[in-house]
Amino acid sequence: MPDHDHRPDQLTPEAAPPDDGWTGLHTLVVCALACWIALLWLVTTVFQP
Amino acid sequence: MTALDWGVLAAALAGMVGWGVWKGGRHRDTRSFLLAGHELRSGAVAISVMATQASAITFLSTPGQAYVDGLRFVQFYLGLPLAMVVLSLTAVPLYHRLRVYTAYEFLESRFDVKTRTLVACLFLVQRGLAAGLTIFAPSLILSVVLGWDIDITVLLIGGLVVVYTTCGGSRAVGRTQALQFAIIWAGMAAAFATLVWSLPAGVSLFDAFGVAGAAGRMRAIDVSWNPNDRYTLWSGLIGGFFLQAAYFGTDQSQVQRYLSGRSAADSSKGLLLNGLLKVPMQFVILLIGAAVFAFYQFTAPPVFFNPTEVASVRASEAGGRFTAVEARYAEAAQVRAMRARELVAASRSGDRAQASAARQAFLAARSKTESVRQEALAVMRAADPRADTSDTNYVFLSFAVRCLPAGLLGLLLAAVFAASMSASAAELNALASTSVVDVYRRLIRPGSGEPHYVFASRAATLLWGGVAVLFAHYANRLGSLVEAVNILGSLFYGTILGVFVVGFLVRRVGGTPVFLSATAAEALVLATFALTRVSFLWYNLLGCLAVVALSWLVSHFSPMVALRGDTSPTPQANP
Image 1 (tube, rainbow over the protein chains, first blue to last red):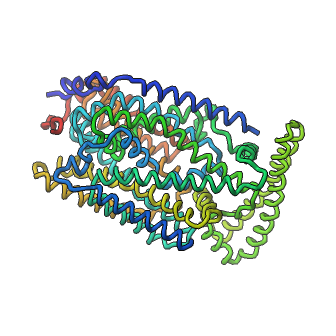
Image 2 (cartoon, each protein chain N blue to C red; image 1 turned 90 degrees about the horizontal axis):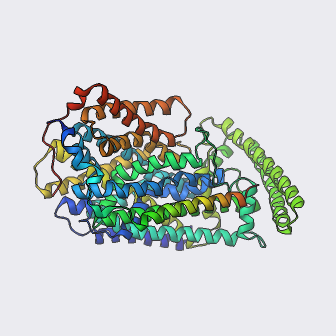
Image 3 (cartoon, rainbow over the protein chains, first blue to last red; image 1 turned 30 degrees about the vertical axis):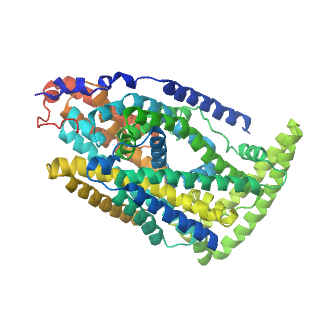
């Protein structure tokens, strides 16, 4: 049987249980990254020659 | 080293091994031995993945990187939080649902056995070599700075890791990593406190960073688009995202860590906590390097930080010339220290014109010391054309040996050993599981009982430990070791990630197209490495895109190839 006929539908991430979706922690990680980039830019600016 | 340092180091090493053997417990099946029986909570998963990624190279070479090149290296990690977000939503729930031991089992379910075997072998080659580097790097630095025999340090680190990893499996790895991480941060905190305390009277840490900034060492963000520039915001966010997604999503040494979580939610939270903490952690390590740089603007550093190379050139015919250059360097460094103090005073005065003039004077003094240092390097090269004239890896430990008080040096050395052992243990554990689950149990000896596979896993751990120690004996002259490890990973990760991306996202592609595409993509990445000067972070994007595009093209234009897959029975999700 051709493999792509049946396996992909069962094995793609959307087939995972619904309780593994986007949470507050995901949002926090993305916001923290934005804050870190801003802080690094600030460090660069404050100490630039 | 004092007796107190030796005592602290010996106690820490004995504690780590004893803790690992004790906490490892007994194992009746491979799920217990290779995945710690799925017992780690999210915090433990986070510590485990962070300790696995942060080897001794991270703690020794990264401060040196900041000393030489400033804070720019932090951009390398900016793609990591995004990768954690994506993986926690995709790979983690999928792996848990399939109850796989290794990431590569998924590839057989999705494609075929040859694709699984190809990717597992790419992992074994890449990680097998990297495990050797993980042991070699700190061994080399310790041997050079402390005068220890490198064979003894390699055998000590490799031997101790093999003992508790073979006895206690994944559980021992996870439990010791928590202890090791505590030792590592105690050592780094001691080094940072000593640095602050060692600054000249009247010079605050902020002043010191001001001096480092005047020399361009506080530049953390670079928004230029030059693909040949190794660390920019864009290469970090885009190339770094692909590298970290490949590393955490497809490298068994990481997959195995978070698959040890109690549930998919614990594994996901562990990865997200890693995404939250990794950038600040690397920033702090780099900041320590910038502080070491600032410290040496007020205090004359050695003209070259690798004492073995210095001893070698002093003993050669060029020894007299080198000593004369060293004396001139010391004089130039004294002038630079004076200019640095003047810069601090001028910056504090608030007078912009005065501060600007002081900065120019300081930079002129820096330029003078740098040109004398280049003369010293030229003498070294003339005396021995094969001399290693990169001393990035020796900067931090050289500072520690010179400045850390008795007891704290032993603690820092224990931290170096702990970091090396925590990363090596996870690597050996992953190499063993891939060898046994993806190769031995799947292809060579299927159907044997669990006790046999537990024994095989222990034997594989021992075997890979031997390979890593052997490779560590032969690895040398790799420039900045932290870069060497990442370049090695980038040669393979893009291709591996591409196969997983096709598996996750491109539904109509079968096993044969992805197998052919992965082979071609790997050749393309290796050719790019050999023939161009493109920054290594872009290899990850290149390899991944090449696999996805070629798979799609092959499937699109050769439907018969796409339909032809391996029709051998595929394993169901593991019990």
